[in-house]
Amino acid sequence: MSLLDPDASARNEVSGASKPRVVIISNVLLYREGLAASLTKDGRLEVASALGSGSALAAIQAIGPDAVLLDASTSGALILARQVRACCPSARLVGFGIAGGADAFLACAEAGVAAFVDSNGTVSELVAAVEGALRGELRCSPQVTALLCDRLASLADTRDSSAETLTRREREIAVLVAQGLSNKEIASDLNIGPATVKNHVHNILDKLKVRRRAAIAAHLTRPAPNGAKGPAECRPA
View 1: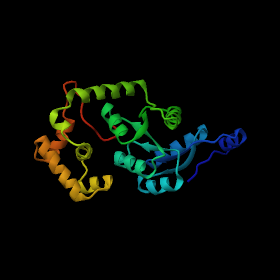
View 2: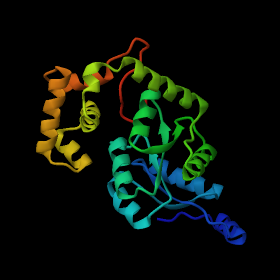
View 3: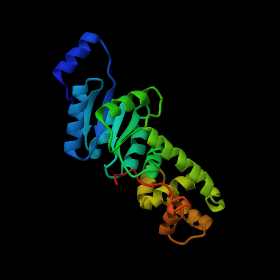
């Protein structure tokens, strides 16, 4: 659906400016309608559609937006982010309503989110994040930048030899296992066969010298000396 403010539309026609087109994804109707109305009133972005995650991919492919605004409280937000990146790589992903500290922001970045607005962010900050992302900039608060830098330093300090032996694909699957995905869900997310996922999981268990899937998650998320944890789902506190 297109939510247009007649006054904002008129102003845009007079100026001749071309506004970036965005799609809002949130499973909470009140959130997405409220944000769509606020962005339309602001006038700097064109809201091409505001919808739930169930119909998001088909709509994004049909619309071809400049940016996708993803509510971090949406169930399976990271999986959806990767799917959006796969089906519409030209669209910039902007996460909003993100809470949970450095782990959540790092997990979103790994999933392809190009800009962040935390749970205390404003509409103006969200618009600035979209505009920055479209210029190829990573827009986030100084606090988030500090959290991400600290997290990267912690990862470098706490990386052990067993984790370093994992291949890139094995590390990717290990993170998804840590997020609670089944082999079938991982296969669908990565577009590979369930048997291939099973083999990778078996290899991961061998290399990490653990027996159960839960131990993979514990290995990746166990606290470091400074309290840092491994990859986490992008979700509210």
